[in-house]
Structure formats: structure tokens, C-alpha cells
Image 1: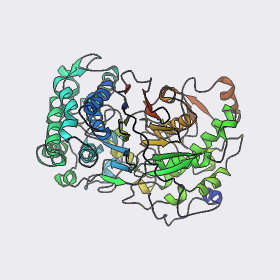
Image 2: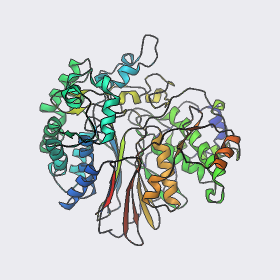
Image 3: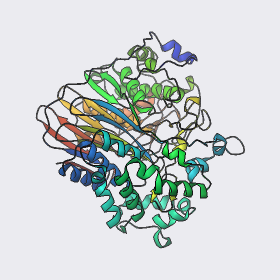
Image 4: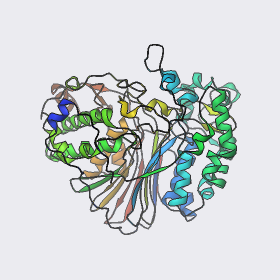
Length: 568
């Protein structure tokens, strides 16, 4: 488990008042003994090409981690609006022998990072340099993470697991509507970069749904990665082209930045909630800490005995408090000392619980006041269980839709725009409306804080593999998925349920249409909650394992037209 020293500064007054008891460790359960082998496999991802690629690799004798490489690399080809080898990922892995690990392949800031590059003349965040072009891009982590998975957890050579993605990139596929819409939505930014135009605007036009699409440059890059592992991307031909392209467009990457990238293995966060063991992401993800804090708060209530309005009220209030802490304390554990023992303590949660009124919202104005914007809906997640019981829960991202829109010429690599996930100006919102403190300020080699929350839930009779894209809503989507799993919903029920979200600032509850019946919505409003209906969000992908029947179930979010959950 993570053991991180508390920060020296004093928590905010309202937190001090809420903290009844402080302990130096947090509750967790021991890793479960290996269960019976399921004997078959299941994968759920946001694109049917990716799911089929993973199943193809399993059929060749690969395990869940080889399949994960196939799924992730194929998503890089067919779903570049959400993830890719120019971005990064976070993974919670459970081996059939009971070993669990968190794999951090998050992007890092280049050594020459200068916070002033992301400010306008008034000292406010400059959204253009933070979101568009090479200055917005961190050093990618996904290629290193895929090579690490193959070397340390897979059964097949990396080249074998990358083969489906290489074939699809070389031979082509039909664009789905979401990718075509994403390109159309970012057309003006794409047109700023010649290599981006060449890749995404063939013949100078926005492509249409169903158009045949090939990506030979990315196929070549994946071939080099497969042949040479880490060095195939971070040194040599590809690295040289990346650095040259970034520099030519005003960026600041160096060959040393690429060659020095490191995948980090960390102990996952583990929280026990009402007899279920939830294994989730530690920092540099903020998601697992927030998820654990919310579950610890909710553990003091019997939610099943409450009506829908009061149950939802308590969940919203727990969300509010966890996001407040998310904004203030969290960052890259290699750079920042965080009070994780406090934040993850059930005693700390008990103190926060005392600040929640049973039938009245706590205005966020009672906490330090800031402003925010709409949460974003990007990134991607997939879940895998193989026939031996190995499990992979992996969330990948390039941040905003189509990342930085900048393609490095000759590589096919679309770079991320993850620099916006740093607190470029403390307590000013990023593109997802999330706030941050100096704990998440940019620094050379530092990982920016993420909301990615890949998770695995172990119960006496069932196992659930859960995660989702969605910017800041990832945390609340996974929370609601965990609660639905514990309530007994199947995979389709978990991914299909209506969602709601509160992130401390702005002080409102985002509500998917149909999430609440009129009586519940009215009751929440009378309690003081401001409800804002918004279009459906998130593309959750879930796999479940019934240990009594040894049955696997997989489901992809119905909000995504091309997703596929499939049992082999």
C-alpha cells in the first residue's frame, strides 16, 4: 500500500473541524486467494475492432495483459480522438496468482517546461498553448507502458500483441461516426499543422462516416515498437522524428526527455466497503483517492434503506467533499508529499460525515470558493478477464478530443495535450473545470494529475472490472458503477444506468436525462441542490465474473455506437 508522509501545512479550517481522529494507516483487505479459473475470457472496450483484436491475441495463447496491448494499440488506430501512442494510460492489474499492481504510464512534462508558456499577458491560463500544438503535449507514456506489459506480465512477444493494430493501420478500416465528428469538431485546429492535415483531412476535406481509412505511418511506428520495444519509440528513428517535428512547430522536447521516460509500478489503493474489496488507482491519479474517500464516507450509511432522493443526496455530499480534497492536496507522488493516510482514513471520513446534513445540501460557498466550467467527456477505458483469471482494468487518454491535434510528421503519432492537466495557475480551472493547487504545478519530468480511475471490485461471489472516460466525471461514473455492482446489477445494467455528477465547483449536480424521476428531482431541489440536465456522458466498459457459476459477462456503454463487450 502507499505510505506517504502528510504535508506540513495545516488543512483548511473546515477540514480540521471535521477530522475527529487521525491515524497513520488506512483500511484495506488482504489480496484474495486465487479463485477458480473462469475457463473463458471477456473483453469490453469502446470499439469493436479493439475488442476483436484482444480476443485474437487471446486465441494465439496470450493472456489478459497481451490482450490489453492489442486493445490499446488498436484503439490508437481506430479511436485517436480518445487515446493513442501519443498519450498515456493507467492500469490496475490482478494476476491469477493474486498479485496486484498499479501501472503508471502517465505522460510527463519535458525538462524545458516553462509555466510562463501557458499564461497570457494578464497571467491567466492560455488555453491555446495548453490545449493545442506541441507545447500542450507531455512526453508520451503509452508505448513504454505497452512494452512494460509485454516484458513483465505478458506471455507473447510484443510484436505479436501489436500485430492486429499494425494490420488494421496498414490495410485500413471504416471510420465510425464519432471519429468523423471529432475531426470535424477540431478541423480548424487540425488545419494549423501540415502533418495533421495530411492524416486527418485527406484531399483537404473532413472525412465522412464509413470512409475507408489507412494509417501507414502509425503502422510503421508500431512495427518499430514491436521489433525494438522501448527503444523502438523512445530512441532512434521515431524519437528523432518526434523531436524534430516538435521543435519545428515551437515545442521544447529533447531526445533526453524521450530516452529518460520511465514507467512506474505503484501499489494500488485498496478500500473495504461493506464487505467488498475495491482495488483502484493511486496518485498520480486523483481518482482512486477520491473514490476511496467517498466510499469511506458512505460506509457510515445504510443506503439500501433510504429512498432515492436521500440516498442520492448523501452520495452528492460525499462527492462534494472528496473533490474539494482532490483539488487541494494531490499531485505526482514522486514530487509531492500528500496526506494520503489522512484522506484514506475511515476516521477522517467519519469526521466529514458529521458535516453532512441528512436533508440539506452544503453550499460549496461554505468551502473555499472558486469557479469552474463544464466537465469534459474524453479518454477511453477497457476491461479484460482471461481464462486463467488474470484481470486488466485500463484507462487511456490523450486528454481533450483529438489531443493537441498535432501529428508528428512521418510517425503517425497524434500528440496529447496533457499539459492542461497541470495546475498551470493555482486554483484556476482547467478545460474540465477542475481546480488544482501548487501540488499539481508543472515541473520537469513531473506527471500531471489525472482523474483516470481503473478499478477492480472483489466480492465473495462476484468480481467486477470497471472504468470509464469522461474527464472529471470519471471518478463519479466509477463510483456509481461500483455501487451498482454491489447492488447486484449485471454488466449491461452497470454501463447503462443514468448518471449524475458533482465536483465541488461549480456548485451544481450535472444530471443525465432520465436519471431522476420528477419526485426525486423535486426533493433534491428542495434540499438545496441545483440540478443541471446535460447530454449523456461517459463510455463505460465493464466485465463481471460470477464466482458461483464461473460465468463471465461483458458490456460496452450503449452511449457509444461502436463499442463491444464480448465473451469468448
